[in-house]
Amino acid sequence: MSKKVLKYSGALLALFGMSFSAMAQSSMESETRSAIGDVRMVQSPEEYKPHVAILAGVANPEGSFDTGADYGVDVGFQPIIPFGLGAEISQSNYTADDFKRTSFLVKGTYNLAGDIPVLKESYLGLAAGILVEDTAGGADSYGGLMPNLGFDIPTFQVNQRWVSLGANARYMITGSNAPDVFALNGVVKYWF
Image 1 (cartoon, rainbow, N blue to C red):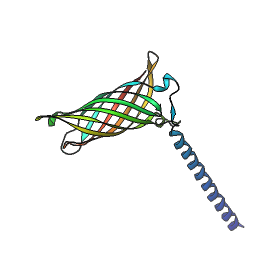
Image 2 (image 1 turned 60 degrees about the horizontal axis):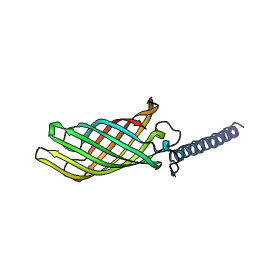
Image 3 (image 1 turned 30 degrees about the horizontal axis):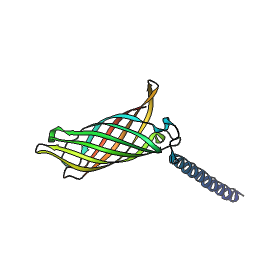
Image 4 (image 1 turned 60 degrees about the vertical axis):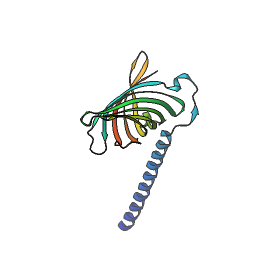
């Protein structure tokens, strides 16, 4: 009798484990699907989500360059939900290496959605533009490409408009001989 009980108990536990695993996977797939927003046209002025942002952080170039400061200004809006469009002017300084890079970028983002904290306030982006690299020998312009990701969490209001605090991680790929750069910035955005 005890062998039968153990056999059926083991079968029930295995069945319960598979059911729980299937429910967890189904729930995870559902949450992942909800993070992918529906593509639709903007229907009200609030859905354009215009913003202006200040970025500040550190830039860590590949190779022998020292880590330096990275800062900039970003503006943008959402012309089609969930896609954003914007522009950024930023600068990275490497004083020990007497090197400065100023970036003029056009940015596109895909804004995530859903109910998962932080993930619903996150975005994936790609930026491209002109990089002006100033060294001791002079300044030259090159093309650049910058994949990035980040999040913006609405934190407080000023004049009944949200201010969000967030972060942005980016990797600048340059067309010059200067090093590519990984940067991490804190972001303060004012939403109009």
